[in-house]
Image (cartoon, rainbow, N blue to C red; front, side, top):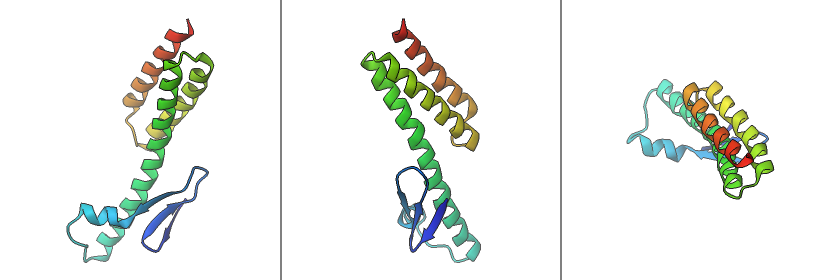
Amino acid sequence: MLKISGTSHVCGQSQPQYTCSLIYIFILFDTMPIKASAKKYMRVTARKTARNNITKGLFRGAIKKTRAAIAQKNVDDAQTWMKAAQKALDKAAQKGVLKKNTAARLKSRLNTAVKTIAK
């Protein structure tokens, strides 16, 4: 999944490469922690943040492409991207990136919009 390489975390999944620099974490906190457990927690936080950002990017991108297809009245593309968005939203809810009801609400609104243009 995520490898620590120098001062950055590089995600080697099937998606494009994403980098989450530790500088981001340093900005959040004014000082570096002294205890080893606190330093480890910073590293863990950086890895989890990178992983969550990948998951968020997947469902946000699918939602944007679905809405773009809806705006162009392209039913086939809208339905294809709707399936991808539903899958990404379900995975995000399962991983705890989104709440279950938030994912359900977004899926419902997208589905309603796709059905509207399909008529």
